[in-house]
Length: 294
Image (cartoon, rainbow, N blue to C red; front, top):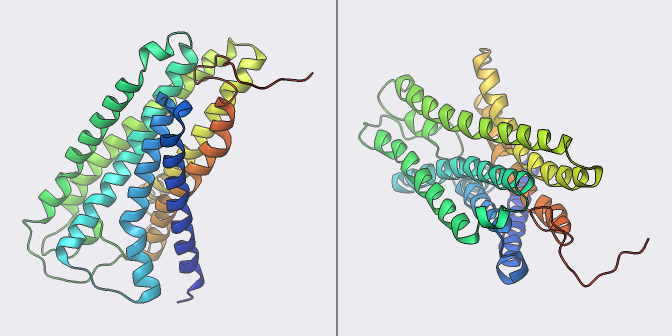
């Protein structure tokens, strides 16, 4: 195997972790950014670090350093963290779409509807729901006998561990697929509906407001596309009867893990913060010590 692609994975992982850490620290230490939208961006950065760190170090160790063993307990922990990160990424993007919907449609009541306290409570609830959701995976895998110690993928996820058991995994795959589809359908449909509501409201707004709303919507849309595109490619190809090889499936998973974690912090640091230095999240003008020359 050529090491260059995997060196790229390592560099992308380190860059993603550093960028998300800077994003978190920047929001924590800048009191002007202690607002609902930035709390949600901070939560997204935490999810990105968790998600990309759940599998990337193991893949790099296997592909570059040749470390091809992992204990059973560590493998189970990695499986739980990986799937928790995937679920929380969907929840984080959905709640951020809800935040933008409230901010754009109800600009004058935004700060009364979505306070910092309510945002934190909502975030905690999503984490609790996410943790309860992924309990199904270890509860399914642990009681089963294992007939193999070799994984088909370079990190531990539910599919890889189930293929090491002595039972037919198809029934268990169907159960996990139903749960995953429900979460995927709910979060993606909610995001699409929020976009429809925002676009309908934008039609009724002035040209200046359209520009501001379009900017904040594009930032979120970029993050959504980066995360959901590899997932939909896997789902569509599977439904069309296209059998993906382990390498192809793993490549799409790597894109799904590293892509959003690398793109998200730069999108929100470079675009979203620049917008909000001149206007509030609700689209209201703030007073800043600058002058606009015409």
